[in-house]
View 1: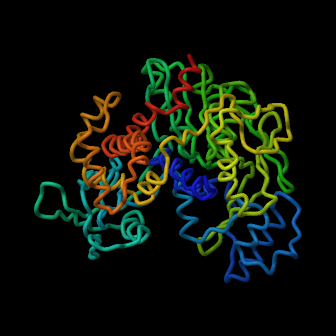
View 2 (view 1 turned 90 degrees about the vertical axis):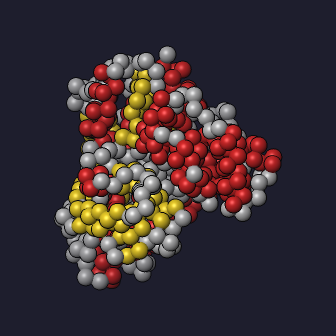
View 3 (view 1 turned 180 degrees about the horizontal axis):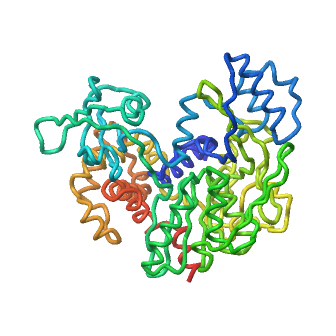
Amino acid sequence: MKKNTQYNLLIALTYSVTLIGGMVLGFKFLKDQGYKFQKTTQVAYNNTEKVDEIIHIINGNYVDDVNADTLHHLPIDSLLHSLDPHSMYLPPAKANELTETLGGEFQGIGVEYYILNDSLLVTNVVKDGPAFLAGIKQGDRIIKIDTATVSGRSLPRDQMIGRIKGRKGTAVKLTIVRQGDRIPLVLNVNRDRVKLSSIDASYLLNADVGYVRISKFGTETDKDFVDAVRNLKARGMKKLVLDLRDNGGGYLTAATGLANQILQENKLIVYTEGKHEPRTDYIATGGGEFEQGKLAVLINENSASASEILAGAIQDWGRGVIIGRRSFGKGLVQEQFPFEDGSALNLTIARYYTPLGRSIQKSYKKGYTAYQNEIEDRFNDGELTKTALLKDSLKSKDFTPGGIRPDIYVKMDTTGYNRLYNKLISKKVLFDFVYDVLANRYTAAYLDNHLATFAISEIDYKDLLKYIHGRNIELDPKQLMAAKPVICNDVKGLLCKYHLGDAGYYRAINLSDPMVKQAITTLQ
């Protein structure tokens, strides 16, 4: 198989696994890494002064020694890439987006939507959010935002978002079309702060095994985790599967806060150290919500930063079993330095180490591009798909490959992930089919009551094939036969996501997930 084809299949597989999980393909998770705290806003009046200010910040804070004289002639991005892959400059919009993502809330109306046939289809309404209170419902189509008609226009997604989001206290007028109604509705929605949980799903896998999936480590993650665990314990949970797959990280303090809920008192969670940062130890304080009980932690190649802090601490202390594939290998700590214009510098100031002194940062000596392609290299080398795995050495401080290696390895199953499947994913055909056709055939109550046994019917599947033909995609019979199980599983997951939310999505796909099955077996 050619390298490009292999990588396309890797992308398709990753996209399928994280279909609704909140992660964007590629290397978005490089942006989601942890920060210790923010310092006072720095002032920079133009680009040249900003570069000078950045170099000044680097000299006083960077994790290693730097020859500043070699940096002055470089543009900002190249300047930071010459340091390490995680130090980066964020323009105002990106800096604000990252703050909202990790802060667990944003200012807006509280809807999720999908651009279907050049209109905005509302796929989820945050309970008790501004849109919910204004009467917007799932399945509504937004055709006009204030005076701007959006239906039938190929507006870029960022422009769509920009028209809906806004400052708390401001209003937006939405014209919507609701199924069954001939006359469009006009609703005025007052924007407000909308809180989002970093817990994607929490439910019982069986009578005594709970499942909690965390997508990122934000300011409220430890509190969200406590709420989820208390709820599951009240329903009989004694063992826990903690899913950190595709979790790109977040705040360092969020990871240590969650570790506090799992590790016993006086256990070292992690320590950080850099040229300008003396060693700082983070110690468990005890009294956590899940200090007792069997624990399995799921990780994969996209689990990074704060995820690795938590997994490394659990592994070093033998508190639980780590299942999956080697994690990303991000052991650098960033601090954010904001500028007056709303932009910010995320600068690496320290490395973090697991309780046994392991630095899990993978090498970036070959440069920024090679670092970005390292996951692809793992796929091409067979690390992600082979049955065998190199043994982990918990006592080794020279952790050359980088990342946390699992105690139990579960290979990536690429069966059915071929060119046809890749094309359906890249063209969003499965999304479109579910939202355009299938969503109206089933109800949330039906799916909730029949989730364990529900499968896409032959009628649904035949209609999907017609839908694919309508998109002028050629169906190779052999590739279709191989990809059919994966396609049907994805369609089921998307349908459950639409009607039952993120929790429903994970309840559906976890029924056949090999890592989840392995975790249940291990915890018996």
